[in-house]
Length: 347
Image (cartoon, rainbow, N blue to C red; front, side, top):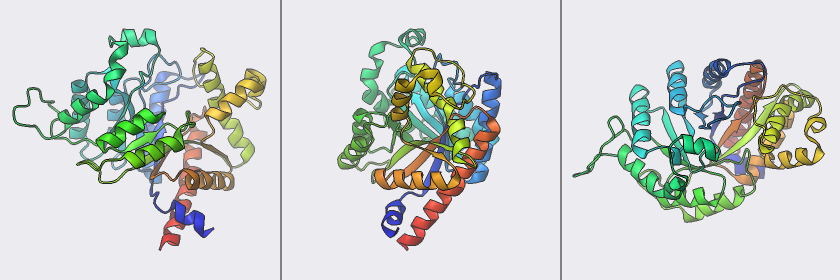
């Protein structure tokens, strides 16, 4: 279909978001080893970025110390960009974030990304344990500006400098699941990543607002919007649906206030959580592709053609590490075909 191929032509980069899932029957150490192994795998498959996310107090997520995990992943790889998707800025002083990511950039020049989110990534009790005021999120835009100042070239009379960090020019992204992040990204002239893998409702409106309101800056001359999608690929549709059941159960239990380690897959998740809860979870996780190579080819092409991202990031919480590696390998092959066909049509 020439029209669809043309609509894919601008999307050239495909990346991975990993939450270091801790599987039932496994440990945090297993999850972190799996993350490093997946990053090496992603690099060999040609993925552009490998991002990790900050969550606190979550039994099923091992990437709370995000900058530390990024350092381990970057040290175990050679070419893939490694970064945060993201650091929850209200949890931290901007100076500390600048020093951490300036250090990472010094160790791994030209390979580090810094995505910033406004949500705390935790519950209120954990937020209090982090010693950050609940109102810190209200200062998000001001904190972004302060952080950008610490990463940029030092200014005459600048009273505080980040060492390391100052002059590192680590690329900064704004993350979001609502219109607020789109406004901040557009106002600063920064790239924007939307968390459509679990909060798809405002995706189209956020992309539209970001692109209409974008102000060219010293960081970016035109808008650059990333969409995140879940991808669960296997040799057959049935196998892929089985693998995806782990994420469905984990998301449902989180919403019910019962977070835990990534569940083992089941044949019928509705039997465990009920059809009403399953329908709610399916709606929240609807920006996704699940199935055989042929099925996810069709589903991803439709998602990309509809939402027109400048970049796609995919994620998958799969209980079995070998099956997760296989899923990302299938996805890489499918997406390479989609991008290649689009490029050929554009020429």
